[in-house]
Image (cartoon, rainbow, N blue to C red; front, side, top):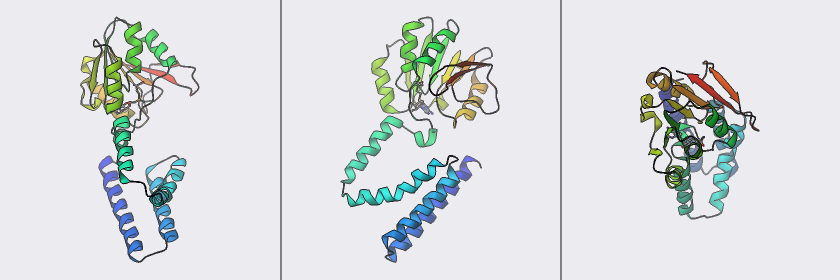
Length: 240
Ligand SMILES: C[S@@+](CC[C@H](N)C(=O)[O-])C[C@H]1O[C@@H](n2cnc3c(N)ncnc32)[C@H](O)[C@@H]1O
């Protein structure tokens, strides 16, 4: 199903759920009936939207948690604060589907050793600048660039990185990859296909596209370096 169809389906589903719950509330239905109906809806949404079974557990907990939280009489300002905090840390994660977690020492070492001499290196979704902070000390031959969308990681990177690293805030989808000789991504499985299309459209022949662990569906990498870390991570390389 394409993205716009999914969006329309999601809107209709949410409206139907809201209407049904409203009707239950107007009829003064007992709380257990509302809870049961909510759990059934949440589970059906989990089944429709996610592949992994454990999403069902998370969805099933939504309404009981809301109910419990309402009993605690917490000021709505705390919810606003929590929402704002998660927005500055995670940015548009609901759309991008790539939350923040940082490259480990194994991949940093592999990158340091494998990246070709000279050229422009981009970290796509650069988090707090971990990769660039490593490379700036050990690979002075490289011109380093990073782009990050979420405000707090970007701000931390701003303080952490020296000014010779070009540190951009924004959406990598709006950045032209044609200016880079190497582009490294550590995102999630979800954006990989679209990212690969973009890299193919924009990166010049002879340049290098790298992904930490996440594959490009249907496109075998030209090289694969086992990282030997606890999660079975691999550095995947494609010659464009
Ligand atoms: C898994 S973290 C990787 C951080 C860093 N590259 C590293 O390896 O340590 C992915 C980062 O990509 C960022 N991100 C996701 N989608 C993005 C987008 N469209 N534009 C810019 N940054 C994005 C997220 O905010 C997150 O900080």
